[in-house]
Image 1 (cartoon, rainbow, N blue to C red):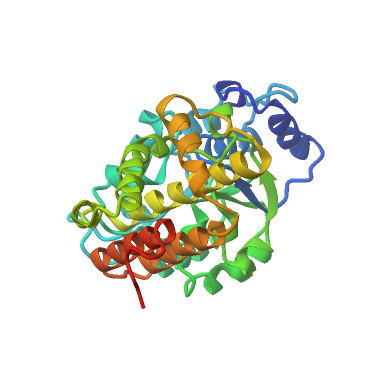
Image 2: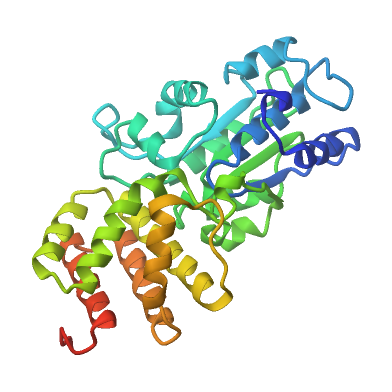
Length: 350
């Protein structure tokens, strides 16, 4: 991946290249931004540029030297990847990133490096499980980086979706992240730095990657999928249609936990959009058609009196989904509490 293959982000590219020409490459950097903002592409292009043996001045890697050719195939011996995994039918025990490396390379190359978490889970047939960066992968990081580089100046370790680093595994890599071997570069990739363990976050240089216009309001491509289900759910809640709510609960319970979290996160965004319409008279950017009409129609029901309750309900639900709560009970309880916010006297709850 060369910088010239990435649309836009000229200022970020310039700053990254400048760190190399100034010999001020920070050993641990966190590239963060919304889904679709090419942060992984930039990280790989940056690593390729650093190790290119025939740099095109201060503009780009050459794309033709032996190092670049291996980077283009994601097969350079000094380029390493760690990403969320879990057990699958093919890897039923002790999964590690290295067990899925062929899937990873194929996935990135076929998607032109536009990797989303749900698509990755689908590519390795994770089904309803949640992927994590586990302790075995943290041990692998330490072992891999203890060796000398094969042929390049820098060994590069890319941790994709570092917010999925399991909290009990994180202490294993704190020392090497803070004091890595010479000429070692950590590039961490994240969509939500607030979820990253603070001891990890504090050891990195933050590189914020702006989103494309589609994502300026924090939207993802999955939001368009969630919209219709969310609209039907809110209509059922407002109408106190208990039979429909039970049906909805049964349907969403069949989703994996990551999809359930994505759906609830989308709900939080809609609530934020409605608050913006109500209190600042601002329409959300990047939204149009039926979705925009729904937000306009729904916003009068998100009032200053219930805004915090809506936010608390959705955040609490996300918290419990992450901790493997019984989905049918969780979503039915959430639905009835939303009904009560719309119609306080309709469904008494203790």
